[in-house]
Amino acid sequence: MNFKNIFEPKTVAVIGISSENDRHPANVIYHKLRLRHPVQAFAVSSRGGFLQGEKVYPSVADIPTNLDLAVIAVRAEQAATVMEECIRADVGGAVVISGGFAESGRRDLQDRLVSLAKAADFPFLGPNCLGIYSPGKLDTFFLPSERMMRPQSGNVAIVSQSGGVLVDQMVKFTEENIGLSVAVSIGNKAMVKELEMLDYLSRDPRTDVIAFYIEGFGRNEGRYFVEAAARSAKPVIILKAGKSPGGMRAVSSHTASLGGDYKVFSEIMTQYGIVEAKNEFELISFCESLSHYRQTIQGRIGIVTISGGHGALAVDFCSEHGLSVPQFSPEFQQQLRAGLPDRLKTIAGLSNPVDLTGSGTDDDFVAVAGALSRCNEVDCILLLCLPYSPGISSDLGARLSEVYYKERKPLIAYVPHVEKYGMLIEGFDLNRVPVAYSVEGAVLMAKAMQRGLTC
Image 1 (cartoon, rainbow, N blue to C red):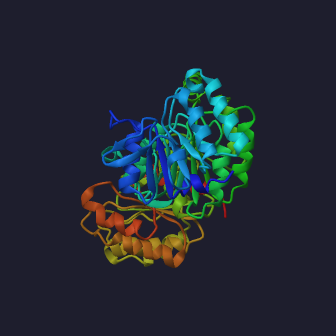
Image 2 (image 1 turned 45 degrees about the vertical axis):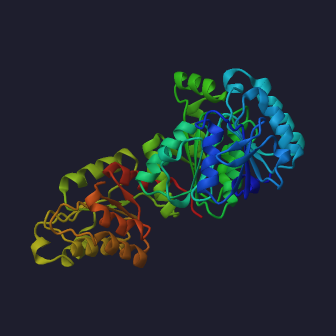
């Protein structure tokens, strides 16, 4: 299937426009496309007429230009007729927003769409979905603009059966400064499924990391998908719903998917080296980490802190998540001590974590991070940056980033998510060093690299 028209359209028809309800999903989508995105948008309704001075066409056949994409937001019973019109008009593909198909017991209506689309080689997303959000390029979500959280443009793609979960992840991506290449809601995935999306995104030059929220698969789909994910040159992260019997029932009623045996699926993902996020918190951390770093690490972590308590928490989280915090050799501890100023030589803890105490400064952080970056006893460094300490400045993020650029050993920073620390955080973000807003989040970023793919 050719997805170029769906994901990179220049002309879009929105079908199902209401003349009475401007909050109708079709109207919301049409207004956003016409006013906010670089596409030529056309309104379609069987009633014709005008909408805010713009012509409403009775059918896609009446639009005097070739159409790349149709967004179908009509009643389920009308969707097949509309799709037939799109196929006859040589539209490039569709997003079927409408619900009321297999998820509500009307598999016959859904099967009719698939039959039409397969016969014409006409790709469509959905039904029962939000469709596509691509920063600055396309937005078929029927959410009003003032309610949308818009992640910045970036290199992470996320595909979700659930539109609600997808929007929630977009909120978190925005809060964590994770950039999106595209977000795709596939809903009932009647035609375009995870496997097709994986194939497309694996070849998409804007995407470096591919994340999936999966509720279930049809028969044999899961096996083919896992095998394809294992072959992908890009990291694939999966968050699977339906872990419990109740969750499996909810999955079936939501998108008419087969939940399957979660334990077996999880074991297969581990066997094939695919990154599984156990929850949304892990999904966010994994996406941010792998969007910055693509190498695999053994999982030997060096920790630098100015708070012994934070260091102890980090060690506990590392242990919980299967990472090691090795005690440094006496020779390396002596090397660290020699590089510290006299005020710290006798009070700093050097065995790992390296505890610079509340007397630590930017210079001390940079010196220790540099030494750890050249040390073969660890392969990733956690920097627990507490900006309220008097020796720490807003320049620390940028200065530590320079250490990474020189030495190329992965650095992960923890900085409390407080507005007044924004300049410090930006110093890391702008220089491609991931920042976590919790100690455990920083540890999970390291875990992602331990389980990620080498490219």
